[in-house]
Image 1 (cartoon, rainbow, N blue to C red):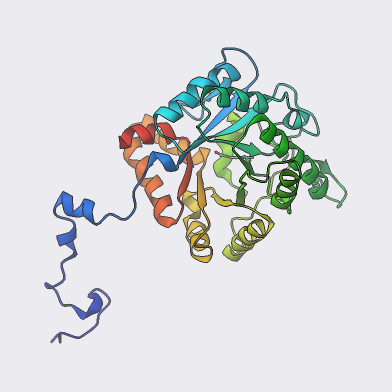
Image 2 (image 1 turned 135 degrees about the horizontal axis):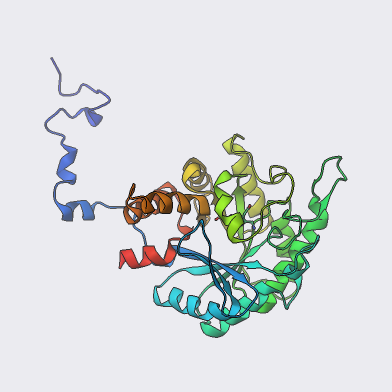
Length: 343
Ligand code: PBG
């Protein structure tokens, strides 16, 4: 016999069936809509763009259907579209012709990404331009900074890299970037950028830190898109180990905030929803971004092309999951499509 106050796991609050019928909240579409808590909005989407040298270039990225390497002259139209769709912003990645050991194009005011920033700003001043601050697309070895064997292991040398990261960030600021997003996972990168920006008249410029960025196989298609695959070794000496304690991600976020990060990111997104949730809970007031990375996009695209999955429904459900886990900002290759699907 069941007594009214008996508490069983499938009958929360002791309510007994059929008094509690959760399907009452699901039957009427209007009731379903009424009780929704997680909603997607184009204003939270950021569109990544790849910029390369040349004129009239629109090279399809094979593993990322719908995305292209674009020359600078193509950027105004993209930024206009971002504005028309009400996107939260665009994130620029540069692919220079000339790569060298120090990634010198990335710190030059005439560099590819600096040209793209100026073109974007001329086209639409009010569209938020975020820049990826890193070296892997600019170095001939494909690593995210200055490589040395000082420690007995060939790896990115942290402190000499900080100097270059700060120089790159200021160069982006001078070109007109609205926000800089360091993605190299160097210790002290946020502090180095903050100090340099403050010292050069850009104390108003926010930093979106790739705070908890994992060494992930899900970046595979991006490395084709940005031509940034490491020529030897891997990135495990600087990006986080997926098997590390989630507390390590929280330490990374805490350090970046202490160094002056204004917004923080978890990357990738789908396989790291637990990390998003943990960051959201530990740092409730901090704007949190999720990077829905290239591999997450390509998998769905490929399955959709084979007729195995519904791209639109899968993409929107994934983005919703990232929001539900705690991210307010979604960096996604679906930014334009999702904005259209939602309208
Ligand atoms: C580094 C950078 C990478 C991505 C964003 N910034 C590549 C990497 O760390 O290897 C990956 C983004 C994606 O996969 O969509 N500049």
